[in-house]
Image (cartoon, rainbow, N blue to C red; front, side, top):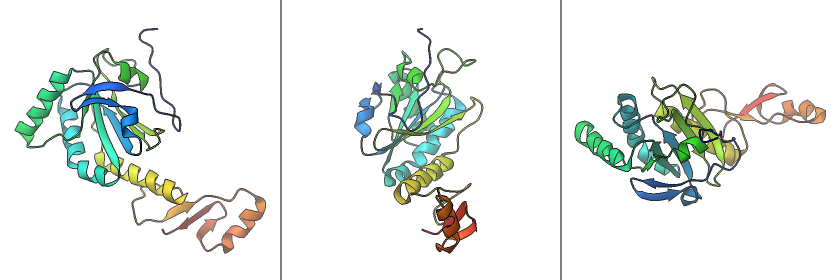
Length: 212
């Protein structure tokens, strides 16, 4: 059972962790009251991961303005993380402002389902987890080893989830702030009959939108 990998469940409490990072010890409870984006990478000093870390760093202020913290992870050692952060600053002129978890024993990686069949035993896949201020896992995104993530899409997804939470609405494909949102569909025959007269932009009884 040593190599068993679990998978966290959406809309359930995110797996607990107590980990050493480049900014000291961190636990899930440290992020209570804030959104957290926890993301893993296969290894330090790899080109695709370097571009992603630069992307996260360049969007750090944006995430902060949205009450969201960033936390990286790989199976490499703390000293490797520190050396890589210094290398990125020296070679690319970018300071990494968020902590990186040292996960040599793969405790966090296994709890979050970051080790997949076919991947190297000591590498976490490129996974991203959105955890809300109550510690609930709200979204998971997995990428292949060969392709980098879009940090802009993570900003968009976070904005969409925060908008849904604040307004009890859904968001359509490609939604960005300023676009119309989707009103929850009626749940009774009477409500469906009345929907057309409720002042929304209604295409049919099940599909109505509005501006915020």
